[in-house]
Length: 203
Image 1 (cartoon, one colour):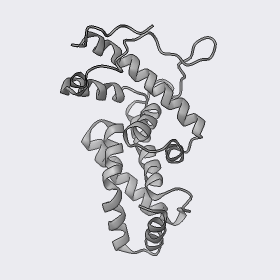
Image 2 (image 1 turned 180 degrees about the vertical axis):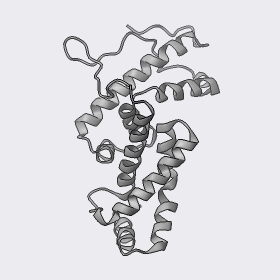
Image 3 (image 1 turned 90 degrees about the horizontal axis):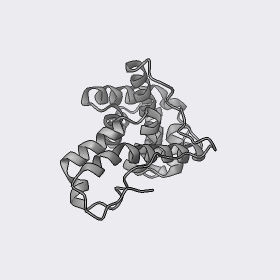
């Protein structure tokens, strides 16, 4: 949706146009549900997040100032709803912002198998896809939300920053940490799988 379309729809929403509310849901429910499902990992919680997102959006529409797109604004609401639900479900989890650093301050993964060049058949097997989804599910919520928005939903770094109310540098840092953690978690699986003989452990 263009910014002009956003503006027209927001004006109708703020005027209390009931058809505009239905249009907002119709246009954006799919992307919000995808994000919620990937964040929560199950349909029931994803549907709850979807409902909470649009209820919150309807209540807050008068405060929407158009500094970001409607889709980015909805992503932000949905992400906050998902994070709140995840934190309620896991009250004793460790800090979600704990960095992975070396003594010199650089973020580095442990040594792992380099699965970047595996044959497509290996990467696309159902088992491999399930393992990759499991690895994404095990990311901390803040790393997961950045990875999903940037690498799965295809938002730009700037859009991701706006959706998560972060600086661009913070998005880049969290995305790097998410990618490194995924490589580390998936390395053992791909190292043991039916990979090509030439594949070697990375140094």
